[in-house]
Length: 232
Image 1 (cartoon, rainbow, N blue to C red):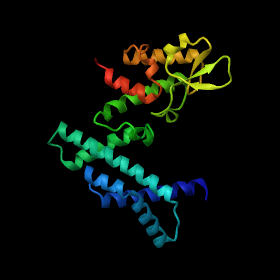
Image 2 (cartoon, one colour; image 1 turned 120 degrees about the vertical axis):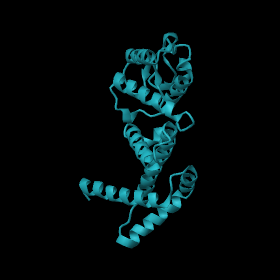
Image 3 (cartoon, rainbow, N blue to C red; image 1 turned 60 degrees about the vertical axis):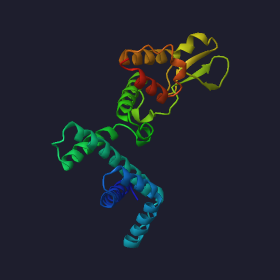
Image 4 (cartoon, helix red, strand yellow; image 1 turned 90 degrees about the vertical axis):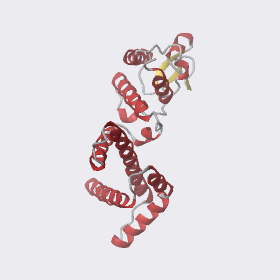
């Protein structure tokens, strides 16, 4: 099967699964929780149904990935529909869901589902906005694709000048105290690139990061700190 055929197959599968889930579940938190709890059973049911109707065997993990993507979109629809209804009670439910879906799709198109799943909470919109900005700064400063920057990624490694291995390390204030090593980014570059990145983060968020830098061992810890301290 060539690439075009594979892409077409995925489009048809996604369309069928989306329609199946939309018909099966109303847009409510309770129904979405039930859907997640029965996800493996739905994978089996859909795979069986496809085989019986077409004789085509679809790998379980493909169906599960498509279901996961649709569930994530439905969660964003629910989140933004509540937000939109609070903004204007005069907006009817159908229009609110449409607006919510447009906003949700715009967010999802710029990042992987894995990242957004890990920062869902009552403040997820704020943290998501900060993560996107941090992701953009890292991408610009280190010339790396945003899709390669994830919320649980380590920020930097300490490259020893005396040894040939890397050891996990924290942020740049430790650089001046480590005479036997140089801090380099998890995404490449040298110690000067590391310093430029930190300066760009401080300039963007207008926060001094030096005193707390040893706590920022991952992108998520930096995002959490910024979410807690911005505007104080």
